[in-house]
Amino acid sequence: MTTIRLTMAQALLKFLDNQYIEIDGEERKFVKGVMGIFGHGNVTGIGEALENDKGTLQFIQGKNEQGMAHAAMAFAKQKNRLEIFACTSSIGPGALNMVTAAGTATVNRIPVLFLPGDIFACRQPDPVLQQVENPADYTISANDAFKPVSKYWDRISRPEQLMTAALQAMRVLTDPVDTGAVTLSLPQDVQCEAFDYPADFFDKRIHYIDRRSLSAGALQRAVDAVKNKKKPIMIVGGGVHYSLAVKEMIAFAEEFQIPVVETQAGKSALPWTHPLNMGGIGTTGSLAANKLAREADLVICAGTRMADFPTASKSAFQNPDVSFININVSAFDAMKMNSLMLVADAKEAFTALQQALRGVDYKSSHDINRLAALKEEWDAEVDRLYAVEREDGLAQTKVLGTINSFIGKNDVIVCAAGSLPGDLHRLWRCENPNTYHMEYGFSCMGYEVSGAFGAKLADPGREVYAVVGDGSFLMLHSELLTSIQEGRKITVILLDNHGFQCIHNLQRGHGSSGFGNEFRFRSGETNRLSGDFLPLDFTLIAKGLGVKAYTAGTIQELQAALANAKDDARSVLIEVKVVPGTNTDGYESWWRVGVAEVSESTKVTESYQAGLKKIETVKKY
Image (cartoon, rainbow, N blue to C red; front, side, top):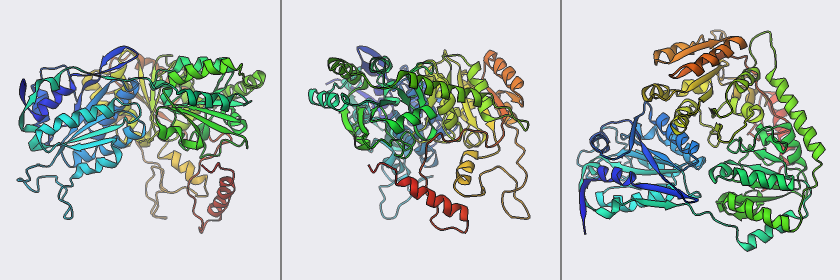
């Protein structure tokens, strides 16, 4: 047997550089490179391997471990999960900084490979710098925190263990069902230990994504479930994008005249101008979509986790005869809402179900004129919100309308948290797929700037815009510097509304007068954060990082800044002051949050009682 003597870290890189993925006969390299920040737990191991590697893996220096890992996730998301970056860190705090990003990747079903350094397997330097000691279990290190947020976790305590661990990692990363965060903990001594690896371990390996077809029985059950339904709707989730099934979904909806509503991850699958596109669904949905959901006697779900926002905490569907069909490669997701499970690839399922329903001459009974009227009503509402004028400053909806009308139809916007996801889900008008990049599975604050950088790495030919609030920007914007370093220009549009106004609105909507969510000075009179707003200048932060920055206080200034930003070759930040509370609100939708059962505030107890009445209408699944 031919062998190659390498350190474990060198072998890992050589292995990763020879992994490929194939779908529909198209083959592509799976691992683009490694993002990393070096410390004593990885610099002399995987750091040395990267420095002297003769392969094609690209190295990108991160500035914050969570930020670089979010960039890696965004890259994979924008690539429809067909290419990835790995992320390496030192031990202890460096590793733990990536746990939040691992959770974000797993919740969103996006593949990211985490390679945190770990404590010495030999235990001779003990306790080593940054080691977490558990007196009850000395095998535990900080990296055990990755276990609950990883779809596969392993610790390589001997160099030869890499061979099984690496193969298992690839199994999960390339699996449409099981994908998410994969963590391989790398003890710092083992990274540097050599082993005679079999040469064929490094052979080119292709991981095939074989589309799962509907079984004959499942197809017949689906036809039986659909054929007598009059008012179906279809909820499109992110899985429609990842299975490359957009065309098949549109053809299915058009043939049977089924209105389409979109989750955050599914948005942009259908052009906003399409007569069957009724907009976002659920808590952050459109009026048209939520009216249709309330009346629907069948809900066809495709590639969605059916979380509480698309279902409006399970209150969106009020027809007593409503039933659910769920197309998903994951049985875990397909069974939600007591659905008829169609465990299959979305592309295959749409094609097979379309042919079968054609065979029974199925057509929905939707009144096309009513659908058109609902869409027209909602389009007029979006126009109204995009045109809101205020004497005291800029409305958030007006700012978003200005941006939406300016950017190109192939440009990408990235967002994740605050009030902006609700406004964008309701109002943003997409023309082409993969132009709406929303991380809303975890809604992780701080994702936006890092995500924009990752999306730009994936699609360097497009303009990429991070749309971010001031609260989220302050949490994490480190990879703005990395975008400069890598020459990957992004535009950050920062809407400053003086704090965490999304949650401020939420608490006030449930009886509070507002507490602890605005960026204000502490008041000497009340000893609370009720003084003047903090004077923040975000353009100075951006300029300090080497980023071109603009401030826009009027729509004309915003339009000029957008035009200048498009012509700039390097990353740009545009700071826009918006009036707090000028975001959109629910359109016949609901979101269940815990409200205090007893309180000194009568408004809070009244909110609790109102919630009890709403809970009675919820589907008990």
